[in-house]
Image (tube, rainbow, N blue to C red; front, side):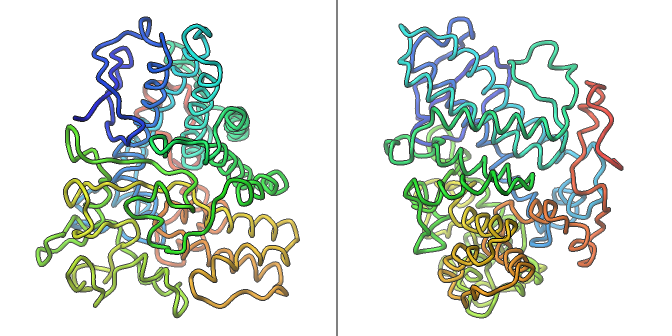
Length: 487
C-alpha cells in the first residue's frame, strides 16, 4: 500500500512518487504545531521535500522541456496542438504567461517551502526528541534540496526572491535578489550541507537516493562553474572524483536504467517507484518518450525527438549513439524500430525502459530513477575547469576516460586550449544529451544565440537566455517586477 505524509497546514498537496526511504505509515491530518515531536516525524518531513522534487513538472515527464528547447530535440507528440505551451517554448515564441514557465516556477517553490519548514522546525527540536547526529543530517539534506531547487531556478529565471521562512505574509511581497546574491545563498546552503551529510558508503540500502556529501560538493562545483569561478570549483571536483568511490559505469546504458540507484556512476538521482496507490507514481517520462505508433505494443506519446543535427554530432563507432537514440532498424523490446514513426526519424532511447524490461507498473509508469548528477558530467566539468585555468595538458586526463568508454579516439595531450574548448563542447553534447544539460551549457558558454539562430530557431539574443518570471506571479506580487530583459 502506498503511504503518504499529510500535513494539512502546508496546503500544498503531495506529489506522491517515492522510493523505499519514503515508505512511511499514514499520519492523517496533523498540524505543524503537533508534528516534529520525534525523529520519525522529522524524517518524514524531510522525505516530503524529496517527494516535492519527484513531481511531474520538475523531474517527471515535463523534464523533457529543457531538452526540447535546445538543438538536441524537437517536441514531437501529436503535433503543435499537443502540449502547445511546450511548442511555443521550443520555437521561442512563448509569452510570460506560458504555462511551462508558470508551472515550473510554482512546482520548485513547493519543495523550497517544505525545506524551509523542515529546517526551521527540526532546528527547534530538543535533544530529548531527536538525536543530535540525526538532526544535523536531516537539516543538511533539507539545505541540499533547497539549494538544488534554487540552482535549477536561477539558471532558468535569473534574479529570484530568496525565501528562507515558511510562507509568512511578507513572502508574498518579497523582491527579487540579484543573481550574485542567489548564487551566494546556494553556496551557503551547500557549504552548510556538506558538514552534516553522510558519505555514499554511509547510506543503508533503504536510504539510497538521499543526498550525500559527494552530491553537495558536486552541486557546489557546478554552481561555481556557472559563475566562472574556476579556481573555487577545481578542488571540489577533485574531491568528488577521488574521495567517494564513484566510477564510470562499464555499461553506459545502465546508468539510466532500472536499478540505477546502485550504479557507481550516479551521484544524485530522483527516485521513482510504481505500485502502492497507483502505478502513476512511477517514472512517467517513459510513456512520454516511447515511440508514437500503433504498430507496437509499447507505443507511447512520442515526445522529445532527437534531431538529425544531434545524431550527426556523434563520431563513427561512438557507442553512446546506440544507447541514446532509436534509429531505423534498431531492435527494441522485440520490435524493429522504424524511422517513419517519428517526424525526425528518431526517438529518444536514453532512460527509456523497454516493454520486456518492465519489472513493475505499466508501460507508461515504470520503476526507474532520473539521474541529476553523475560522474561523467563531473569529469567533463573538471576537464573544462582545468582548460580554463590554462592547464590543458592535465585536462586530457579527464576527457579521455569518457572517450575511451565511448570507443572513440583519445585526445592528444598537446592539444591547444581553444581546440580543447571545442572538444569539450562536443563531448558534453554527446555524453549528456537528454539530461537537461545542453541548453544551459549553451547559455553559460555564451553560445546560445549563435547556435540556435544558425540552426533556424527564433532565438532572440538578450532575451531567451532566461525564462521570464511568470506574469501571473508579478500580478500577485508587483515587487517581482521588472521582468527579465525583453520579456
